[in-house]
Amino acid sequence: MNGEASIQNLINVHFRTNEALSKLLMGNSTTNPTSPISLNERNGENNQAMLHFIYNSKLVGVFVCHDGNHGEWVLQIPFFPPFQTMDDFTEEKVRGMIWAGLGIHPTNDNIASTINSNDEYRFDILSLRPWTMSSLVAQKYVNDSNTVVLAGDAAHAFPPAGGVGAANR
Image (cartoon, rainbow, N blue to C red; front, side):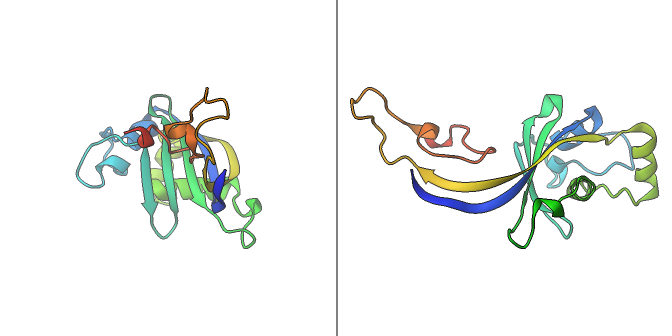
């Protein structure tokens, strides 16, 4: 493989939401007036998307929808070794980053009581793992006996949120 072996370091936070939070993430409006707006409604539109890029004072990251119907999400957060390590990303800190990315602030009494009493916006963190983004491309696209051809997404290493056949269009 040719290319850069390390372009960016990320923390992947795999989490599972309940139905209410999954609807918020997927852009289905809620009738609760104290609820934050969905990621898809921020621009006055209601479009479902796979990637949601968040840039605010508490979070720079990407929410990646793995399965919106079952509440499977990953939050990718950039981190900078050797200045940061996995120890800097405790479950409590990452939970706060997820809330901040969604515009939910548990310090707000109304939202905090809703979260604690009804579990309306509950989510379970399934894993916290480091990941290094690379930019690698195959050196050859055909094997020596000309029986196997690499094409499209098979010919490069791609991010866990990427691929999706973009090179084939």
